[in-house]
Image (tube, rainbow, N blue to C red; front, side, top):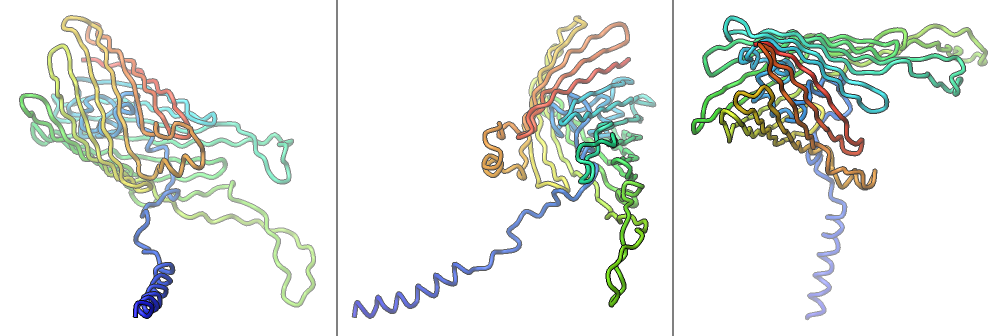
Amino acid sequence: MRILHGVVAAMILVPATGVVAQEIPDPTNKRNTSVGTTAAEFLLLGSGARGMALSPAFAALTRDVEALYHNPAALPLMAGPEAALTVMPYFADTNYRWAGFAVPLAGGEYGFGVSFANFGFSDQPVYTEADQDNTSERTYSVSETVIGLSLGHAFIDRFTGGVTLKLISDQLGNASATAFALDVGTNYHAELAGRPISMAFVIQNQVIGSPLKHTGSGLDFEDYPDAPPGIPSRPLDPYPARYETQASPLPVAFRFGIAYDVISKPGSRLSLMSEFNDVYNTESSFGFAGEYEWSPEGAPLSAALRGSYSYQGDNDEAELGATYGDKNIGMDGVVLGGGLKYRFSNYEARVDYAWRHFGVLGPRNVFTVSLGWR
C-alpha cells in the first residue's frame, strides 16, 4: 500500500513540477519605464551647485535665483534681484553651463526671471567606415540649449505659484530640432512649532505642441535603386534620400518636496528636506537632503554645508556591479557641497561648490558664482 501511495504521489508531482517549470512569466511584472526613449536629457542636469547639492528637494526651500530651474513659484519669495552662473565640466570632454537672472516685483507679489542652459561639445573628428583615420579632417559638434522665461505670483501670503516657458534647441551635428515646454510649480509655506516649513509640487518639461523631431542635412544620404524584376542587376546612378526620424518625447518630471528648519536662529539654520520624483524615463525615486548655514550676527561672511542622497531604482547595484566591477556604484546619487556668502553695502556675493557622483561614471565638480542686491 505504501508503495502504491508513493507511485500515485510521483505521478501527481512530476506533471505538476513540469507545469511549474513551464509557467509563463507575468508580463505585468516588469519595469514600466521609458529608458532611452527621451531626448534632451540635459534638462535634468540642474542649475547651480546649491540646488544640485540639495537634490530636487530644493524646490521646497529655494528662495534664490535657482528657483528659475527648481520651482518658479518661489520667485516672489526672493529678497531681491540676483544673477548666477554655473559651470560643470561633464564627461568625455563635454560641458554643462547654466545662467539665470531673477527679480521679485511689486513688493513680492510677483517674480520674474530668465534662464539659459547649454550642454555639448565642439569640433570632434568624424570617423566613418570609408575614412577610419579622418583624413578628410571633418568635424562635428553637439549643442543642446534651453532658454526659459519664468513668472511667479503670490496668490495669498502662504501660497505661491509659477510657470516657466522653455524654448529647447537640439543641435546634433547637421541635424537639429526645436520644441516648447512648460514647467509649473507651487509652494506652500507656513510654520510648525515656530519654525518655517514649506512644501512644493513641480511638473517640469511638459511639451507644448510637438516634441523634438530632428531634421537637416545630417540625415541625407545617397541610395541606389533596385533593378526592376526580371532585369539583371546593373549599376545605376544613386539618388538623394533622407532618413525620416521619429519624434522623441522630453523627460517630463513630477516632483514633490518638503523642507523644514529644525534649527532656526539668527546666527544659524539647519534645514532638512525630502523628495519624491517620478521622471518619465526612469523609475520613481526619493531622496533626502540637509543644509546647515552659519551666519554670525553683524559679520559680513557666512558659510554653508550641504549634502543629499537620491535613490534611483533603475540603478540596480547588483547588475551594475556584475557588469562594471567595483566602481563605487553605491555612491551614485550622493552629492556633497558648501558655499560662502559675503555681504557688502547693498550687495551679496556667493560662491557655491558641489561634488556630484554619477555611479559608474564617477564624480564631477560643480561651481556657481552669484551676485544679489537688496
